[in-house]
Length: 148
Image 1 (cartoon, rainbow, N blue to C red):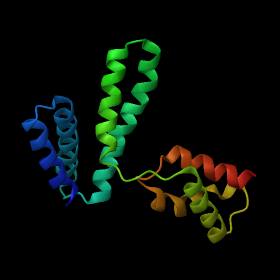
Image 2 (cartoon, one colour):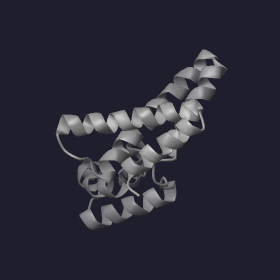
Image 3 (spheres, one colour):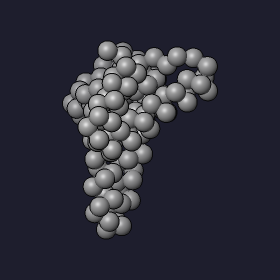
Image 4 (cartoon, rainbow, N blue to C red):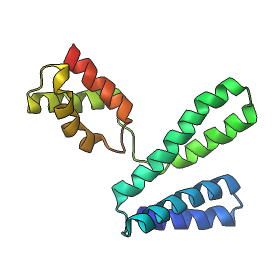
């Protein structure tokens, strides 16, 4: 089942069970996908839809750090619940060791030997990790392996 169909089905289920948090998150995702399709005048493929989900997840994660300082537990809990709903639509995230393996393979393949070659390595690594690992983690792994 493609993501659009799954989102619509899950939205209907959330409405039936009166799960407002889930319903709201699914409506935000569907609206983001539909807006991107309208802007690009195309039908989005699965990776493009996953990018939209990842963008929403990243927003919620950034909010978590800010909310933790505010001391508002109710808002913090709501944000965490939203994050959980959104993450259920992302593929399994890569572990640090899996990222390291991909980075080391890309370094070997590109012949990179210093931090100046980081761009070449990132070009090879990013397509393999897109949607499955945070770009910041990948970037740190590449830096660590090229400078060490």
